[in-house]
Image (cartoon, rainbow, N blue to C red; front, side, top):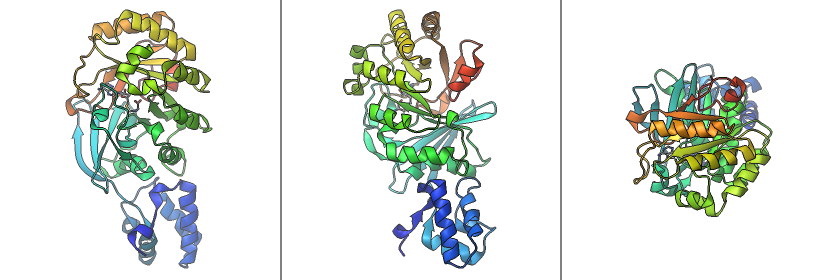
Length: 363
Ligand code: SAH
């Protein structure tokens, strides 16, 4: 059997991997529970490879390695910010590199994962868009951004996942769909659905697909401009999926959505933009996250002053829309894939804060 014929256990939903492993155990003369032992080493208690599964007979480990694979991502660079944010650069088998960023916030660690190498969408202010689209990531290449952190020193166990790294997750739905299962399944990473957030430009077929899942995964939509005319200049995808269609779909979504709005000095940060943005948020009951522009995006944009961000937020809040200003994290390590921690503008409504709490603090 060649390496390519082996089944990659990290691409399978946990229940399928378990079934395959138990069946395999029996086929080589072991008891089924030996398969269950292997399954635990996939996500719950990750092993670097089969030989590291020291609770299993050596001969069985050898057989496993002939039939299955547990591919690793190669950690090629790691940087830690003065604020504790850690950025990991992983190399994939074909030489592509992807980033993941771990953001500690008290007891939680939010991991920002990439879903594509590059991105096709060319948002004007985004560093990933500037590099163009390379390819979709496979399930294991997304999920292993979380798994690999079990092998860093000291190990990191993410409590929250945000799909806010490189790529548009809803344009890679088959792989992302399966990744959600792995991250959420108690036999997988065991991360609650409410602690997993997909961020999208508003790719409608993908929102349909996400909505069809029964779990309470969170949806964040990158709005960034309150009119089609302005949004189309920042986000070319707006011609395919204009604002009214995106807002209408958000209103139908059975969970509360979050708007992401990156503050671009002199572009989308005037008082009238705040008023128009609040009106859109009210149409679909959205929570608004204002994101300071992270340096390191595409050239040609300046950040909005902190004072104007607060004034903007006050207008939005005055129109009875809940709003938070996210705080930039990892500035000194160019953790610039939209990785920002929130500072809540307003106390109170802790339940709502928790609903949207994956990327900002409660209360
Ligand atoms: N494609 C998805 C997810 C990846 S980007 C999406 O667009 O939502 C995650 C978030 O980071 C998006 O809201 C994106 O607009 C934002 N972002 C991109 N570049 C940024 C920058 N330079 N500063 C701040 N936020 C940025």
